[in-house]
Length: 289
Image (cartoon, rainbow, N blue to C red; front, top):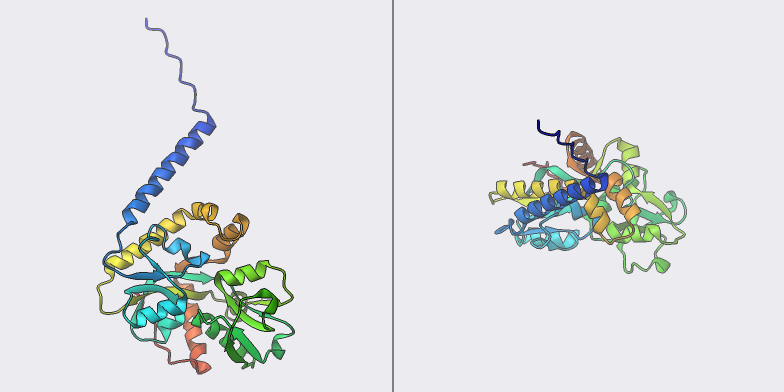
Protein backbone atom coordinates (compact mmCIF):
# COMPACT_ATOMS: atom_id res chain seq x y z
CA UNK A 1 0.00 0.00 0.00
CA UNK A 2 1.15 3.48 -0.72
CA UNK A 3 1.77 5.56 2.37
CA UNK A 4 -0.73 8.32 2.90
CA UNK A 5 0.43 11.68 1.62
CA UNK A 6 0.12 14.20 4.42
CA UNK A 7 -1.99 17.23 3.57
CA UNK A 8 0.01 20.27 2.55
CA UNK A 9 0.37 22.97 5.17
CA UNK A 10 -1.85 25.98 4.56
CA UNK A 11 -0.22 29.08 3.15
CA UNK A 12 0.59 31.56 5.92
CA UNK A 13 -1.85 34.46 6.03
CA UNK A 14 0.85 37.02 5.27
CA UNK A 15 1.96 35.03 2.23
CA UNK A 16 -1.61 34.96 0.91
CA UNK A 17 -1.89 38.70 1.45
CA UNK A 18 1.34 39.27 -0.48
CA UNK A 19 0.10 37.13 -3.38
CA UNK A 20 -3.22 38.97 -3.48
CA UNK A 21 -1.49 42.34 -3.37
CA UNK A 22 0.85 41.31 -6.21
CA UNK A 23 -2.10 40.09 -8.26
CA UNK A 24 -3.93 43.36 -7.63
CA UNK A 25 -0.88 45.40 -8.69
CA UNK A 26 -0.49 43.36 -11.86
CA UNK A 27 -4.14 43.86 -12.71
CA UNK A 28 -3.84 47.61 -12.12
CA UNK A 29 -0.79 47.79 -14.38
CA UNK A 30 -2.65 45.93 -17.12
CA UNK A 31 -5.62 48.28 -16.82
CA UNK A 32 -3.33 51.32 -16.84
CA UNK A 33 -1.45 50.01 -19.88
CA UNK A 34 -4.73 49.51 -21.72
CA UNK A 35 -5.62 53.18 -21.17
CA UNK A 36 -2.19 54.61 -22.00
CA UNK A 37 -2.15 56.37 -25.39
CA UNK A 38 -5.79 55.39 -25.89
CA UNK A 39 -7.12 58.95 -26.21
CA UNK A 40 -5.53 59.69 -29.57
CA UNK A 41 -6.67 61.48 -31.67
CA UNK A 42 -8.97 63.13 -29.12
CA UNK A 43 -7.83 66.24 -27.25
CA UNK A 44 -8.96 66.13 -23.63
CA UNK A 45 -8.50 68.61 -20.79
CA UNK A 46 -9.03 68.37 -17.06
CA UNK A 47 -8.31 70.30 -13.87
CA UNK A 48 -5.35 69.57 -11.63
CA UNK A 49 -7.35 69.56 -8.39
CA UNK A 50 -7.25 66.53 -6.11
CA UNK A 51 -10.98 65.91 -6.54
CA UNK A 52 -10.55 65.25 -10.28
CA UNK A 53 -7.74 62.69 -9.99
CA UNK A 54 -10.00 59.59 -10.03
CA UNK A 55 -11.54 60.67 -13.34
CA UNK A 56 -8.31 60.62 -15.35
CA UNK A 57 -6.70 57.52 -13.82
CA UNK A 58 -4.43 55.99 -16.47
CA UNK A 59 -4.84 58.93 -18.85
CA UNK A 60 -2.66 61.45 -17.03
CA UNK A 61 0.09 61.63 -19.66
CA UNK A 62 -2.41 62.40 -22.41
CA UNK A 63 -4.62 64.95 -20.65
CA UNK A 64 -4.05 68.72 -20.77
CA UNK A 65 -4.35 70.15 -17.26
CA UNK A 66 -5.54 73.72 -16.72
CA UNK A 67 -7.93 75.76 -14.60
CA UNK A 68 -11.68 75.43 -15.24
CA UNK A 69 -11.82 78.87 -16.86
CA UNK A 70 -8.85 78.08 -19.12
CA UNK A 71 -10.43 74.78 -20.14
CA UNK A 72 -13.69 76.56 -20.92
CA UNK A 73 -11.85 78.95 -23.23
CA UNK A 74 -10.08 76.11 -25.00
CA UNK A 75 -13.39 74.33 -25.54
CA UNK A 76 -14.97 77.49 -26.94
CA UNK A 77 -12.07 77.85 -29.40
CA UNK A 78 -12.42 74.19 -30.42
CA UNK A 79 -8.93 73.45 -29.11
CA UNK A 80 -10.32 70.52 -27.10
CA UNK A 81 -12.79 67.77 -27.92
CA UNK A 82 -13.73 67.19 -24.28
CA UNK A 83 -12.95 68.75 -20.94
CA UNK A 84 -13.89 68.40 -17.31
CA UNK A 85 -15.40 71.83 -16.79
CA UNK A 86 -17.66 73.72 -14.43
CA UNK A 87 -21.21 72.62 -15.17
CA UNK A 88 -22.27 76.24 -15.80
CA UNK A 89 -20.05 76.26 -18.89
CA UNK A 90 -22.30 73.61 -20.41
CA UNK A 91 -25.55 75.16 -19.21
CA UNK A 92 -24.73 78.59 -20.69
CA UNK A 93 -23.42 77.46 -24.08
CA UNK A 94 -25.55 75.36 -26.40
CA UNK A 95 -22.62 73.58 -28.03
CA UNK A 96 -21.74 70.70 -25.69
CA UNK A 97 -23.17 67.38 -24.58
CA UNK A 98 -22.64 66.00 -21.08
CA UNK A 99 -21.13 62.56 -20.63
CA UNK A 100 -23.84 60.69 -18.78
CA UNK A 101 -23.07 58.89 -15.53
CA UNK A 102 -19.94 60.86 -14.57
CA UNK A 103 -19.54 64.05 -12.57
CA UNK A 104 -17.80 65.69 -9.66
CA UNK A 105 -20.55 66.16 -7.09
CA UNK A 106 -21.31 66.24 -3.38
CA UNK A 107 -24.28 65.44 -1.18
CA UNK A 108 -23.76 67.93 1.61
CA UNK A 109 -20.47 69.32 2.87
CA UNK A 110 -17.86 69.43 0.11
CA UNK A 111 -14.87 71.03 1.92
CA UNK A 112 -13.42 72.65 -1.20
CA UNK A 113 -16.04 75.22 -2.24
CA UNK A 114 -16.92 77.79 0.40
CA UNK A 115 -17.34 81.41 1.33
CA UNK A 116 -14.81 82.48 3.97
CA UNK A 117 -16.35 85.46 5.75
CA UNK A 118 -15.98 87.63 8.82
CA UNK A 119 -19.21 88.68 10.47
CA UNK A 120 -22.72 87.48 9.59
CA UNK A 121 -23.66 86.62 6.00
CA UNK A 122 -26.32 89.33 6.04
CA UNK A 123 -23.59 91.97 6.39
CA UNK A 124 -21.67 90.85 3.28
CA UNK A 125 -21.66 93.65 0.70
CA UNK A 126 -18.67 92.61 -1.41
CA UNK A 127 -17.33 89.16 -2.30
CA UNK A 128 -13.87 88.57 -3.67
CA UNK A 129 -13.83 85.40 -5.69
CA UNK A 130 -11.49 82.97 -7.33
CA UNK A 131 -12.65 83.32 -10.95
CA UNK A 132 -11.47 79.83 -11.91
CA UNK A 133 -14.91 78.26 -11.56
CA UNK A 134 -17.98 80.03 -12.88
CA UNK A 135 -20.18 77.33 -11.34
CA UNK A 136 -19.00 78.12 -7.82
CA UNK A 137 -19.54 81.83 -8.39
CA UNK A 138 -23.05 81.25 -9.69
CA UNK A 139 -23.84 78.80 -6.91
CA UNK A 140 -22.87 81.43 -4.36
CA UNK A 141 -24.91 84.08 -6.20
CA UNK A 142 -27.96 81.79 -6.13
CA UNK A 143 -27.58 80.86 -2.47
CA UNK A 144 -27.20 84.49 -1.45
CA UNK A 145 -30.01 85.69 -3.72
CA UNK A 146 -32.38 83.16 -2.15
CA UNK A 147 -31.58 84.93 1.15
CA UNK A 148 -32.28 88.31 -0.42
CA UNK A 149 -28.58 89.21 -0.64
CA UNK A 150 -26.97 90.64 -3.80
CA UNK A 151 -23.39 91.67 -2.99
CA UNK A 152 -20.90 92.94 -5.54
CA UNK A 153 -18.42 90.34 -6.84
CA UNK A 154 -14.78 91.24 -7.46
CA UNK A 155 -11.74 89.18 -8.54
CA UNK A 156 -9.50 87.90 -5.78
CA UNK A 157 -6.10 89.54 -6.16
CA UNK A 158 -4.07 87.40 -3.76
CA UNK A 159 -4.33 84.00 -2.08
CA UNK A 160 -2.26 85.19 0.87
CA UNK A 161 -4.16 83.88 3.88
CA UNK A 162 -3.03 86.77 6.06
CA UNK A 163 -4.55 89.40 3.75
CA UNK A 164 -7.69 87.60 2.62
CA UNK A 165 -10.65 90.00 2.31
CA UNK A 166 -13.58 89.82 4.70
CA UNK A 167 -15.69 87.76 2.29
CA UNK A 168 -13.89 85.47 -0.16
CA UNK A 169 -15.06 82.58 -2.32
CA UNK A 170 -12.41 79.85 -2.51
CA UNK A 171 -12.45 76.61 -4.50
CA UNK A 172 -10.36 73.49 -5.04
CA UNK A 173 -7.00 72.79 -3.45
CA UNK A 174 -6.41 76.46 -2.45
CA UNK A 175 -9.69 76.32 -0.53
CA UNK A 176 -8.63 73.16 1.29
CA UNK A 177 -5.25 74.70 2.14
CA UNK A 178 -6.99 77.73 3.64
CA UNK A 179 -9.47 75.56 5.54
CA UNK A 180 -6.62 73.61 7.15
CA UNK A 181 -4.62 76.71 8.00
CA UNK A 182 -5.19 78.98 10.98
CA UNK A 183 -7.68 81.69 10.10
CA UNK A 184 -10.26 84.01 11.64
CA UNK A 185 -12.95 83.60 8.98
CA UNK A 186 -16.18 81.70 9.32
CA UNK A 187 -16.71 79.01 6.69
CA UNK A 188 -19.95 78.72 4.72
CA UNK A 189 -19.67 75.44 2.84
CA UNK A 190 -21.66 75.81 -0.37
CA UNK A 191 -22.26 72.08 -0.82
CA UNK A 192 -23.84 71.89 2.60
CA UNK A 193 -25.82 75.10 2.05
CA UNK A 194 -27.18 73.77 -1.25
CA UNK A 195 -28.21 70.45 0.30
CA UNK A 196 -29.93 72.19 3.21
CA UNK A 197 -31.86 74.38 0.77
CA UNK A 198 -32.83 71.75 -1.82
CA UNK A 199 -32.22 68.29 -0.33
CA UNK A 200 -30.33 67.44 -3.55
CA UNK A 201 -26.71 66.78 -4.50
CA UNK A 202 -24.84 69.54 -6.26
CA UNK A 203 -22.94 68.86 -9.48
CA UNK A 204 -19.81 71.00 -9.78
CA UNK A 205 -18.15 69.62 -12.90
CA UNK A 206 -18.96 67.34 -15.82
CA UNK A 207 -17.27 66.02 -18.92
CA UNK A 208 -18.32 68.44 -21.68
CA UNK A 209 -18.13 66.83 -25.12
CA UNK A 210 -17.87 69.15 -28.09
CA UNK A 211 -20.64 68.55 -30.59
CA UNK A 212 -19.76 67.75 -34.16
CA UNK A 213 -17.48 64.79 -33.39
CA UNK A 214 -18.24 61.10 -32.92
CA UNK A 215 -17.53 60.80 -29.21
CA UNK A 216 -18.82 57.28 -28.56
CA UNK A 217 -15.32 55.85 -28.21
CA UNK A 218 -14.18 58.89 -26.24
CA UNK A 219 -17.09 58.45 -23.84
CA UNK A 220 -16.19 54.81 -23.34
CA UNK A 221 -12.59 55.73 -22.54
CA UNK A 222 -13.58 58.41 -20.03
CA UNK A 223 -15.99 56.03 -18.32
CA UNK A 224 -13.27 53.38 -18.21
CA UNK A 225 -10.86 55.86 -16.61
CA UNK A 226 -13.46 56.71 -13.97
CA UNK A 227 -14.11 53.02 -13.26
CA UNK A 228 -10.36 52.42 -12.95
CA UNK A 229 -10.03 55.44 -10.67
CA UNK A 230 -12.75 54.21 -8.34
CA UNK A 231 -11.40 50.66 -8.33
CA UNK A 232 -7.98 51.99 -7.32
CA UNK A 233 -9.19 54.79 -5.05
CA UNK A 234 -7.24 53.36 -2.12
CA UNK A 235 -4.06 53.51 -4.19
CA UNK A 236 -4.78 57.11 -5.16
CA UNK A 237 -5.38 58.03 -1.53
CA UNK A 238 -2.14 56.36 -0.40
CA UNK A 239 0.13 57.70 -3.12
CA UNK A 240 -0.99 61.29 -3.70
CA UNK A 241 0.89 64.02 -1.87
CA UNK A 242 -1.76 66.71 -1.40
CA UNK A 243 -2.45 67.33 2.28
CA UNK A 244 -2.34 64.18 4.46
CA UNK A 245 -3.65 60.68 3.93
CA UNK A 246 -6.40 60.94 6.54
CA UNK A 247 -7.78 64.04 4.84
CA UNK A 248 -7.50 62.51 1.35
CA UNK A 249 -9.43 59.45 2.52
CA UNK A 250 -12.18 61.57 4.08
CA UNK A 251 -12.38 63.96 1.14
CA UNK A 252 -12.26 61.52 -1.77
CA UNK A 253 -14.07 58.71 -0.01
CA UNK A 254 -16.88 60.69 1.59
CA UNK A 255 -17.31 64.33 0.59
CA UNK A 256 -16.89 63.91 -3.18
CA UNK A 257 -18.66 61.42 -5.40
CA UNK A 258 -18.33 60.75 -9.11
CA UNK A 259 -21.66 59.50 -10.43
CA UNK A 260 -24.33 61.39 -12.32
CA UNK A 261 -27.68 59.71 -11.72
CA UNK A 262 -31.28 60.74 -11.22
CA UNK A 263 -30.64 62.62 -7.97
CA UNK A 264 -27.74 64.58 -9.44
CA UNK A 265 -29.79 65.44 -12.52
CA UNK A 266 -32.65 66.61 -10.30
CA UNK A 267 -30.20 68.85 -8.44
CA UNK A 268 -28.89 70.12 -11.76
CA UNK A 269 -32.41 70.89 -12.93
CA UNK A 270 -33.07 72.86 -9.75
CA UNK A 271 -29.85 74.80 -10.30
CA UNK A 272 -31.00 75.65 -13.84
CA UNK A 273 -34.32 76.92 -12.48
CA UNK A 274 -32.61 79.14 -9.91
CA UNK A 275 -30.09 80.49 -12.41
CA UNK A 276 -32.97 81.49 -14.64
CA UNK A 277 -34.96 82.91 -11.71
CA UNK A 278 -32.11 85.20 -10.70
CA UNK A 279 -31.19 86.32 -14.22
CA UNK A 280 -27.95 84.36 -14.51
CA UNK A 281 -28.69 82.93 -17.95
CA UNK A 282 -29.20 82.21 -20.70
CA UNK A 283 -29.62 78.59 -19.61
CA UNK A 284 -29.85 75.70 -22.07
CA UNK A 285 -31.33 72.31 -21.25
CA UNK A 286 -28.45 69.87 -20.70
CA UNK A 287 -28.12 66.96 -23.13
CA UNK A 288 -26.71 63.70 -21.78
CA UNK A 289 -24.98 61.17 -24.03
